[in-house]
Each structure stands twice: as structure tokens, then as C-alpha cells.
Amino acid sequence: MADLHFELVTPEKLLRSEEVYMVVVPGTEGDFGVLAGHAPFMSVVRPGELSIYSNLTTVVSRIRVEGGFAEVNEKGLTVLAEQATEA
Image 1 (cartoon, rainbow, N blue to C red):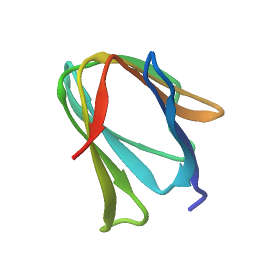
Image 2: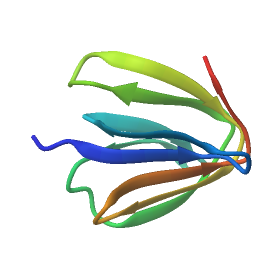
Image 3: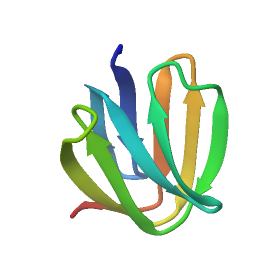
């Protein structure tokens, strides 16, 4: 499957801009996974852990996020987080 373009942005800076396999985001209605080709989607992000996968089973990074928004569009996934720290 094609890679997903992922960006993580805080008010201070762009923390990540990379091609990944999948990202699992802590949404207010539950965690959701985003793969390449996902339908357009927006969600409020709740405090929790964002997981970045390099393939179906390998988590390469976990990032603690504190609120914000996630948007999936034809370009990929963008998470605008109020705060984010590597877990």
C-alpha cells in the first residue's frame, strides 16, 4: 500500500513531516487509524498517545498530544496539536 503523508504541527513549530504507513490518533469519539487513501475526515483530538507505524505491526514512534484537531484530506493527515511530546 502507498505511504501516507503525515504532518504534526504545534503552535511553536512543525514537529513531523514524513511518509508513514499508518497513524493512530486519539480522537474524542475514540482512537482512529489513518492509512493512505482514507476518506476525508476531521476530528477533535483528545489528550492521549499518537502512534506512528512504519508497517502493519511496527510502531516507530509514540507522541503524547494534548488536544487539537486532526484533518485527513487527499494530501494526507495533518494533526494540529496544542502540545506534543515524544513518549
